[in-house]
Image 1 (cartoon, one colour):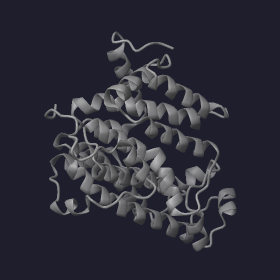
Image 2: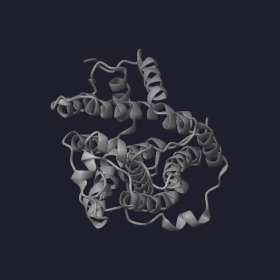
Image 3: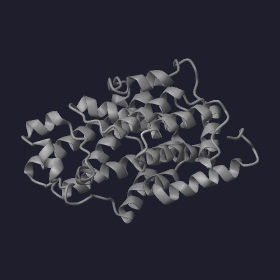
Length: 323
């Protein structure tokens, strides 16, 4: 392990950017709209989260989660594991005062994946989304300079919405890998035998109804999140609006396919992503979005908001004009 060194800082952040260009096209595209003051630390944050996710997904080692927690311990003590990603993240966590509780929650979500946890209700599934997605959205909000409870609550809504969209998109792929994230109560409502579906994932009207129901729930959260985008610093709104539009468009593609994400996997073509990014860049905040800004956070994400939120009397970090 190494102490943080200013000599390798730029090389470490460059390695994070290269990692994301190779493995996260949607984030890379949306991040181009972020100001440099946010884009640079965001690359380290996303790279560390991607590394942690891959460490669980690609490993059969039962000690993988413990190793992640050890690397997190090292990062927060200022003596990170000898990796560009760990060094860059440790610097960002210190400089941006990212609460350790958020990273602990993220790794808890990865641990749920490792143990093959199933989810009974939509609330249970939202608790999972809070950990693996809202944590990242909340940390991004901190990087942008916003720590007030209302903005954070809407960022968490967006994170859960995105995760539910991922789940809706990957139903077939997950089932073929022995995973099932759809709420078991909803499967029972549709008279779907979960065990039979996992043995032989087949698309039909019953599974379509569950996928449609999940996307409707996600749509409500996307709409709630719009108020939060309007409350972000002006130089950050386009990037987050682009990410919101691109992800919600995955749901649109699923709907166009008759909600079949079992025999096919929906994706947003590059040309349409570019169009959505341009739309986000030139869009102006709708006045009606402000109406939902004070809605309470989801019960499943409230602990994240509490971990970060500062009293309204404390101003956020100053931010420069877009670069």
